[in-house]
Length: 186
Ligand code: FNR
Image (cartoon, rainbow, N blue to C red; front, side, top):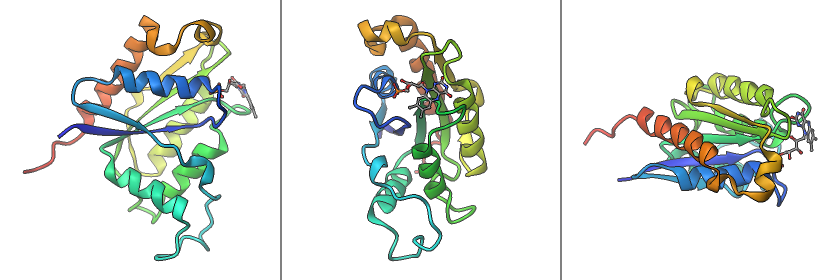
């Protein structure tokens, strides 16, 4: 039974470097660990308690919750918008955090990879994402999170999965996530 990691990418643009990093994370996953990049974040409406009613939750939000429930761990791959995590990811965390104390992300091992053209690698967004994940109930692997700074130009020529240092960093993140997954009692 392979370990299923759900990857949520905070950029929706076609040429997203963070999306490339998520693809590279999938390629770097250790044997027995599978990364699935979630494709429906753009369709998830903004969180609204009036919509979050059993039986009539918006389909796109429900699908996100089901994907998280089916996962063993979650990986956020995020840029930084105005010094913090982009709304698309914060919105996903909001839907995954409810009902309070019993959200789909509760107790899921979670790690964050961030990237930015700046040398800091979107470290503020990385930290804010880890904080939000923790408050939402995930088991955040603080030490496994990675901020990839100053490699954007490089990634224009070389896909992150083919950049040895980046691939090794991502393999480390995925191994830590896999290691944090509680074995299922048989
Ligand atoms: C940015 N960008 C940015 N970068 C950064 O390091 N710190 C920041 O606060 C911001 N703020 C910001 C706001 C908005 C609305 C946009 C669109 C962009 C630049 C950002 O890092 C750059 O666009 C990356 O390419 C975004 O990642 P993807 O889309 O390549 O994955």
